[in-house]
Length: 245
Image 1 (cartoon, rainbow, N blue to C red):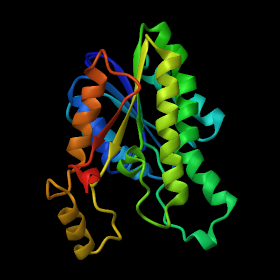
Image 2 (cartoon, helix red, strand yellow):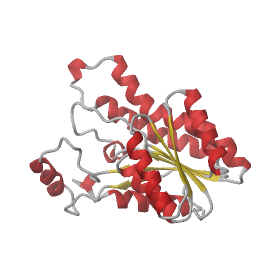
Image 3 (cartoon, rainbow, N blue to C red):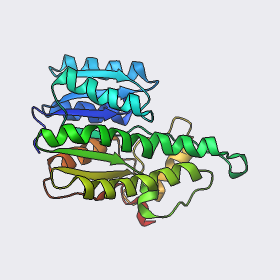
Image 4 (cartoon, helix red, strand yellow):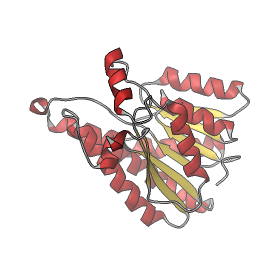
């Protein structure tokens, strides 16, 4: 699928999501972004796209709520004239000691990652099919894609990201042949704000390519999965070989 002239919705407007949005806009797509709390980041991205001659909108909502998920899809179609590309980047990433876990924390991670992707896909698919086809790109994690949790204190996060992989495969089968559904599993792309310089260097040493990838590498993977016409139900790790060690 050529993104030029298409409409893309990116859930999760901050950090890497903003780079993905600008990359799609740079290829001629009209772009919508959703946010829950990151209003400033979303509006700044919209402003940069507009300044570059593109068209973008930002919408606020909780994508784990069925009403909001459907409303975001409808708002995108109303504002931009359609929807052919859905990029589910909204996520939650929190460390929690096992002894302090409760059902609410587990449910919150599943809602932010797997439930939101399910709801947006269900709302978007009928429109994509009527338009002749589409692309849905979900986001997992290099650890989940490798089937190895490795790090303690991330049980809800890891479980939710494994659920995203299963969701992608099932959606790919259900929505074929009109809609292609794939997953991107990022590795060391951007250091979390709380990481110390030594922790950042440790990740670099553990990554075969010896560096953090940067959000542009995710944008390249998104564009590839938008443009492909014969890959569905797949997961692409963008991790610099981190899973090999």
